[in-house]
Image 1 (cartoon, rainbow, N blue to C red):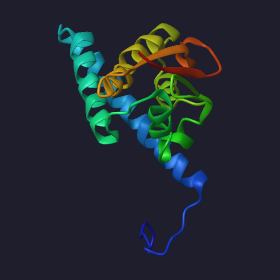
Image 2 (image 1 turned 180 degrees about the vertical axis):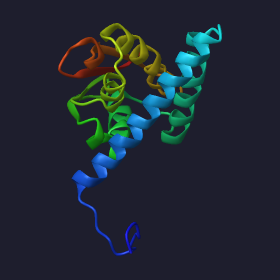
Image 3 (image 1 turned 90 degrees about the vertical axis):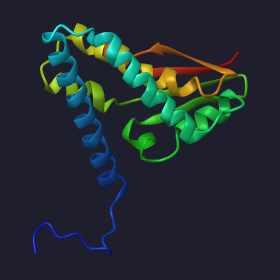
Amino acid sequence: MTGEVSADKTYTQKELTEVFRLAIEDRAKWFYLLLKYAREEGADAESIAAKAITEFGHMKGVAIGSMPDAASFATALMKGHACQAFEMEAEKLEPSESIVKFGYCALVEAWKKLGCSEDEVADLCRLARNGDFGMVEKSPALELEFKQLISEGQDVCELRIRKK
């Protein structure tokens, strides 16, 4: 029967990564459309989006737990399917400072497919990063900084995690 899922089916990492990316793209489309229509209604869409995405980041931060140092946070961030979906690589893993590079962003790809301009993509990414900053707020000893961004035309996103 078509569409039937077998409990015995084995998926490749490539298949899982693609499915995960498609789910992220769906999230990006929802975000874009919610923001678009909130703006049309005259709502303070940026403020609402920043609050909602920060709270989402808080939830993710609670799920991974408070991290004592940069290496622990980077390692926790790179667990699971997101690591492959975003093509994450640890460039540096040290307690005082860690650097994680992202070679792919399904959010950016979705916004481009929707026909967003470069400025719109950069703006959407700026708002979406509130999730990352919200997540690190649950690890008060740490701070995040993005040194490069795919949404601004660079080849990778470079996330620096530092111990305060």
